[in-house]
Image 1 (cartoon, helix red, strand yellow):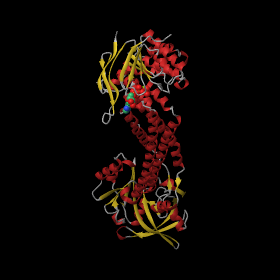
Image 2 (cartoon, chains in turn blue, brown; image 1 turned 90 degrees about the vertical axis):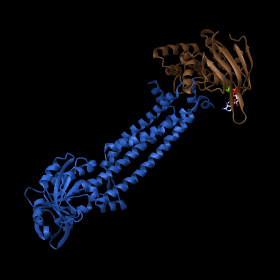
Image 3 (cartoon, protein in one colour; image 1 turned 90 degrees about the horizontal axis):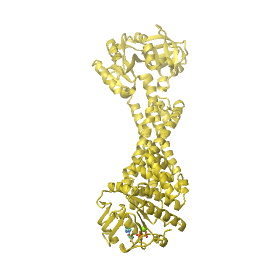
Image 4 (cartoon, helix red, strand yellow; image 1 turned 180 degrees about the horizontal axis):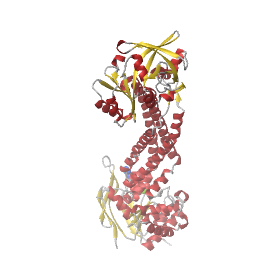
Length: 405
Length: 233
Ligand SMILES: Nc1ncnc2c1ncn2[C@@H]1O[C@H](COP(=O)(O)OP(=O)(O)OP(=O)(O)O)[C@@H](O)[C@H]1O
Ligand SMILES: [Mg+2]
């Protein structure tokens, strides 16, 4: 206890040195937390945009569907599989879709569009579709209307209540044609989706395409996306051999790769930051040891063991680094939250690339507590590893040389 | 009389590879309890080196040193640190004290190292400050004390651990003559009343005059060793 109090007093013997060390650690924690929150946030944002609210984390298709996305590669609705999926605890829920291209026309305007036949209730639970309604309403029970994405509606120059004609090729060569009223409009952050998708109830879609009892994919939502690989294994176990189970990373390798490149870049910046503060801390430690060399010699001479002096120095470092890390961690919370609520909006070529990939061009931060703790912990470790240096110096010192002036 | 230091034929040699320098050259030294001994000699004669050897701060290249019957030349450096804590008090020329601690805490510090309980520590601190005449400055930081006062606190610190003897390497070198006198008064009183053994090196004739025994070193050898009647009032 008295040693701790001595350590605390020693810490403040050179106020500005201690404050400089603490400030550098403080900002290191703050910046690296902000960076990794940003990294996770960008990642989450991409995944949420594309995966969470659209493709799902895992999809189950008929083998071959993904390579050739035709109705003829669709699968039968499978109540047994559905039952089994419900028993896997990591699966939050699932829905099924019948997806195909069709031509939408009204008057003399005709555009290609992606028809999504969805189960209104489940789709809403899985991808929160109802929340994206910007005008009109969501599907009513037993009604066979259409919900258009905002961009598509604009391209078709239509409004809620108008009737849209759909034409296309149905299951096994049948002709698909039908007329439906537009009941609602949804908005998607991703421009690609927002310009081309239209929703209709699954049964209407099956009727339109003559694909009765068929679906093209099951879309699975997870409790926690981080154990996606485990869930995939579980799903593989319960699904028939004619089905393929794909994670979003397998379905969209471009996105995955893009995220990895971004993460790596961010990592270099972080490593640079770590190196920078390492030098900063090390420099102050060097000066501190030079200044106190005589004193340590004196302490050794009067009978303070090297191990005790080392403990003293370690305490000083821990107090210093720990307090600074803690303050950095506390300060990073409001900053990270701010950028979570007010995400950085990016412009220029990166923004274009994002839009091409189909993402909203924003960089929100993640508020995942792990980012805070991991960064504070890394900086704490750097500080503690560096504090081994003074201890090493003490271990090889002797009183006579240390007290030589 | 009780022997506390018995150094036999000790040498300290620097530059062993090229031209050897005998900082201490085959010295015999015998110190008994209650001595008040001055170590004198020209600069470079080996006073500091000899004090470091008998204080267990440095290792002799030849010879043996026994303190209170314990041979210290073969001790591991860790054991030597503990040995110093238990048996030897040190007063250095300057910067004896830990700057962030008060005078009182500096004296207490060495007893904390020894693991002495708080009650005994406080009692001893009070007594020691009374003896050095600084009861009113116990809570001052070293920087708030004069050089002479700092040296007195250093003497109290050296005594706090109840050592066998106190080694002081030029304790008055940085002091004006009044402060030097005052420090010697305190050391002399402790020697007379508590039978504390002091061995100090000095250049100052007035300090030399106050010793009971004067050992003179030249080129690492003892050239004279005399007892005298000290001029102490
Ligand atoms: N680390 C060392 N390396 C080489 N020679 C040394 C070393 N330390 C001391 N010496 C030599 O040993 C001799 C004795 O030195 P010492 O410091 O003991 O003298 P001193 O009597 O205390 O002198 P002063 O009165 O100036 O303090 C000197 O010749 C000195 O140059
Ligand atoms: Mg000397």
